[in-house]
Length: 206
Image 1 (cartoon, rainbow, N blue to C red):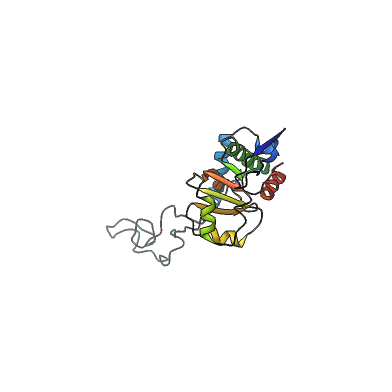
Image 2: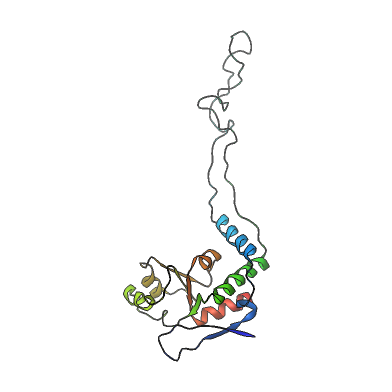
């Protein structure tokens, strides 16, 4: 059974695009989507923080004073964490925050998000948005009637004119099918794409 994604072209005869129910008609899996978004955000962390422990700081090779007879507490190095200029206890080290997620789970999560966008009528098709000369004013005029705080435009390929037109509109985010990620989909109030990009997404997730 095929579903239809509505079109918002200015032309009166603009028809909806039929899509597969196996991709755009799935039940919403909140737990899987949360795991998908968490995994993507965790992978974006650099994990480059670093501190020096007692073995990494310079100095401290000689025993400060003899073991007994001075009246002071015994000490073997001046680079102990309790000393000034000493190393850091449990020092942070560079690490990767990436999380493992199976490919089937990733695709199922994206299908779940797209299906929910369709049910809420937040996914629409518009070939008119993708035709322009790269002028911000022109694209803004095409989007002014869309009631959304954040708009995501998904292109089937890199489009320089569309990039130039959208980069100065603060509520518009532009991406391609190759760079599509769950955070962009979840955060958008309205997702606009063209028929070619929609078919590419359907082919990759089918």
